[in-house]
Amino acid sequence: MAYTQILIAGFGGQGILFAGKFLAYKGLLEGKEISWLPSYGPEMRGGTANCSVIVSDTPVGSPIVSNPDILAVMNLPSLDKYENAAVPGASIFVDSTLIDRKVTREDVKAYYIPATKLAADEGIPTLANMIMMGKMIRETGVVSFDDIKSALEKVVSAKHADMLAYNLKALETGYNYK
Image (spheres, rainbow, N blue to C red):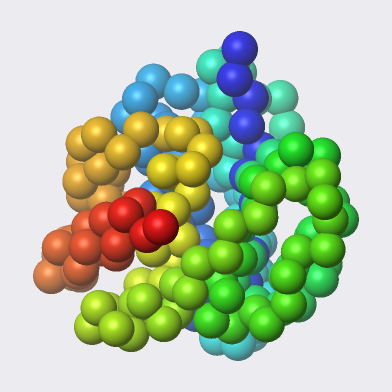
């Protein structure tokens, strides 16, 4: 029985909520039980944002993620705030372009992805969030990478349909990052 609690955190404007929504839709398309709970500060851009996602084989009782099995952080304040909340054995994904310190815990698996730099290098500067999701999917298997485009089509609005291919490129960049 799988019950995985995921917390994605960073600044507003980094696509934190979008990344969580994508992950939730991917889980739904795989027939999983899902919870998606966005949370953001009063500032639209630059304030703190986090998103709790639960992917489970059984119904989800509470959408609150207090102790994540998977933590993805895209800024230093988020790493400082949530590192110690992760369960022992958790996977922690760090955007090493924006966070210059290492995870201090030794009972977790840390992954350092220069997501913001990779996004800039690939010509998709606003999609570091999806690079992080690609790496998370590869390392944790919380959802499958198969038919990833179907989930993207659910969350990329018609107004931004031109971004579908870029999001796919970002996911693949993260998935293939060594």
